[in-house]
Length: 241
Image (cartoon, rainbow, N blue to C red; front, side, top):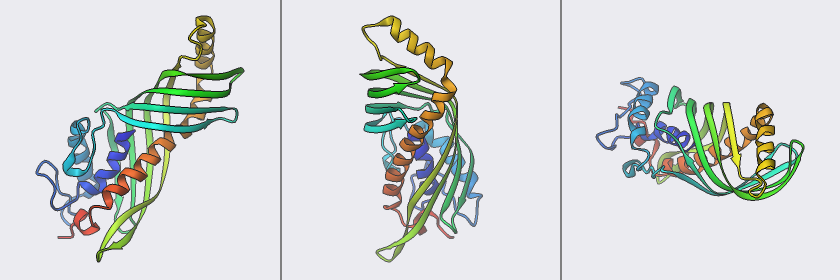
């Protein structure tokens, strides 16, 4: 998911005047801005693990979410702690459209695999089983495609226009979701029963888990992208020459 943030960062970052030499500058009057952004993402994703200080992009190896709380369906609450999110460099940005006049960015993102390690607290009911469990586990999301629309506006600072992203709409589609949580460490038979119950009802649980994906991605984008945009004026990011 961090990569999802980075794509939005690069919408602006890849267009700045004083960028490092390894970044292609995308001037609206001279190039197809959307394709230019896609080229930059394709090149720069190899640097994401170590971070790119020149673009204010931190290391993503891994991305850590200290604490978050989610409602899964109507009967189950999940709190995650120290969630470590790993994304492969095989992600892609197959579609990109930047509407600079209206400060709106449209993206389609593809993640072959999202791998997470986390500590958790679960309280409530999973299908027919009552749960009150604390432990650690893994979450794997395979073949996720997300349609993202980021809306923004301009605001004045020191006489110059700066972009602020005001809201983000994310519609993910997930091919498969694997939750491997150590719910019953002292009862292997019950643990295996719950795993089978999950596999038999994956489609239902996958839909319940989608809001978790949306919330994580949205929070990351709103915080990191706005921090990035706050450091570069609109004219710097989108040179009109």
